[in-house]
Length: 156
Length: 150
Image (cartoon, rainbow over all chains, first blue to last red; front, side, top):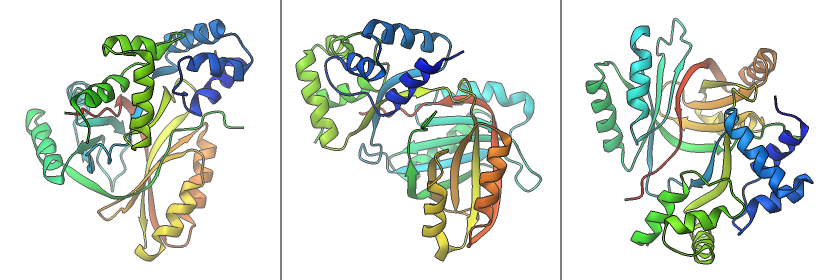
């Protein structure tokens, strides 16, 4: 399991990776450990699945992706895994989950679809539906972003 | 305007930043440029608003957190107050107003059921909140925001 130094590393990483030649060296110093130990621990965190990846986050509206829709379906239990695998390979789909249903809300399959226009979102959802033999899609377009942040794990 | 080269850079940096002493030197090599030039380009692309930040992405389940999507029915004229109150929770990472009967959707990360119940109870009691639906995630097939610049 992760120890207090790992938590320190996670907290420092969450502040953002500096765009300098030796970013991990800078962060290691902040954690009070050597760069080598910092890199070793990153490799361990990667290995055990805690750290998924590191990289840039783009400002997607700025990058031209102005339309985003939450698209949900009702999918039979035994088709979920295959659909999840196929649909995750779609570039336009950033998130794909199954979720608990309620009597009033029977949808169990959730995707986030990003495109340049609503028309494109609609086309992508329609194609996904056709290719996976789904039906009854429901799209909820975003009209305003009130918050978009990274999770701050182990905030102090 | 973005050049072809800028687009290549933006595509490359969304992938894995290598775990190395000089990670940008490794990326620069792939892009057939120098570390120094790449860092200059990255600075420009973030000043111009294309890059939000460089960060690390964690598996919340592996860290002992549980995620939910919460759909809220909010009275139109209370939207700002309700959204602001929801945003104050550290575990709320995304909060979007959407078209539809449920017009506010946010994600919530918590470490326990108790914590979740507590937060959702408080939110459901906010003035202007008409209904709230908690949709915990079961299986995660994909969490990856990547945009092809082409």
